[in-house]
Length: 267
Length: 244
Length: 120
Image (cartoon, rainbow over all chains, first blue to last red):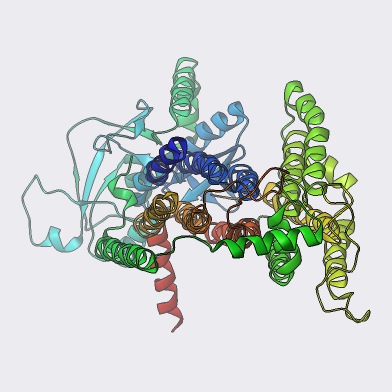
């Protein structure tokens, strides 16, 4: 029977394509299609009982269950690195400039905000894998992955390099010395500075402000030339979110609310 | 399509190993099947099943096999199903997210459509179960069809309304009660000095609705069991919002 | 004749399922690949009995030769039971994700190993 052979040949193609998808939802839909094809093959192989059961179970119930498991009902997932002034925890609550912006966005879209704090270098990876929708936390995204959607800069910033006491004593005169980019959490650097350990780090303005409160005598501070800005990153599949976040930022800037929020959060 | 982030770099070698292993297994399977020269069942085998079916009075030969001659396997499989449901209920009920999902009020089209579609789907499920010994279908398929109809209604109308009608405690009782009934019917012939798992009921005219001995009874009970268990599984998935 | 094609496609599907299980890191897709393996087994069994030139195993008056009904009977309840087992496996995946906040199996492995080291 020609139809049966054609369908049989289509089966591995469908299955392979379904399992190679990047988004989980597409893989699930591909497997539902595979289930339907399989039910047809069963019917054409003179097994009607098996065909009915496979169609009812595979195409309907299994797909239902998977989609119910991976749906995110109305949650806006933010993955962030903690930065005082921009996005920080204080007791049970969150505060900061970025948090206020994202909170506004979530309220406007009718979603609720779920925040996860991760080390700085994992923000991009989380967004790319689809584990979160928005990445925040004092990010300067001029070298970010090209698939991430980047909002326009909402706050200008500068870059500083801080080098530990040891380097300052050896009289390292190289002006172009740069610290390592921050990895992990800012609180680790704060601990290092308080303990007087050697630190070679490159920070942005907000983190530098926070760090300087702990006393940076003995550390060499170099400010880099150039202009940078803080921005937020959106996962590649959420173009709608990107558009709305951009629109919200534009509106906040135009009405002057952005300046007011900045003043309140970053004295 | 596939990207580097989705392939673990540590398992490249194991992926190659898996491909080689699968190819070897496939080769082995093909060789074995061709070697057996399995040209087909001897006609006498198939006739035997036809005779079994005619004796039981059921037109659907497959159902007379798995509810007649091989009833034992079917009962144990239903038991596995019940235990899996128990597992889902335990793990999602006690360890899942505690927040209850607010059901989003759907638009009128969805709500009215689901309310209108629910009775025909349930009727289709009952039909498939009832005529399971005459045409393709049976308890498993019919129960699953009815459960997916109920799931449609639950998604569109919200699980609170369904829970008000089918209270979880009553559901629990019915689920395990039906399982008990299946086991009772299967062991019933023993005190009546008939061999275990055989047909205690008379088989009527072949091809009519009332025929096939106890096969329609089994179909009905398995249909109810599968329906209730699938609904319980699906309800827990709907209620406990995951973080995936 | 028809059996051979069915069986080879079933073996190929099984291979795709196992490959998908090993290669993809995402836990949900690993489960989907396992389900594909299930379906491949069922296809193999069902196509083994479509050899005899017969009709479907329903005794409608006029049907003389039917296909072998035994593999179909074996496989029928297996399909529904597979669904229940798959649901249970999905529950475990959901609990894992809640604990580790990621569906990346490599990362979960790393964190589990790290935890084990801190315990021992």
